[in-house]
Image 1 (cartoon, rainbow, N blue to C red):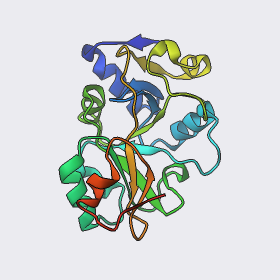
Image 2: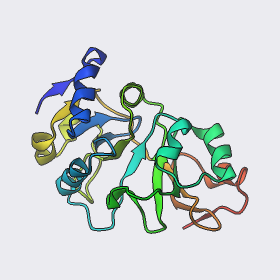
Image 3: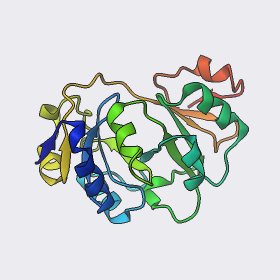
Length: 207
């Protein structure tokens, strides 16, 4: 397992991703594992590393709302309001997916999960690539997400192409709001509360 821990090595990270590599990297919550969204073979590797069940989908981190059209077939006005208030931040939005995406990126409602992260490493990567970054916690399916690299599962550590070490991370999860559902559905509670969402979308409900 090759580790890096300095922004001076960001070019190595970008080169790896653009060649279809699989990266373990820090986010504002836990360590994630990812690749560029256009590399279908790398997405397959991640699903295998995690032992993800068929139908389990991964979210995509994007540079900002200017990249939504790369992945979304439509952007409702409610999404614009939420993005302006909560991005970058811990709100994942499920929006109608365009055709041609990897099946692991499209959920049961036909949507794709997107978020803009405020974290320094993810922002640095996304400023340098012309794609979205797959983001799923770097743990086998059903196990606890790692907050440090000491917590990282050995099989993932050995088989990932590169690991970014940012020390101990704070934990936590983003709220997932599915705007493909009518009325909009909170599929996972997290840092953004139902009350905060209902201030903009009064009809929002929680599963």
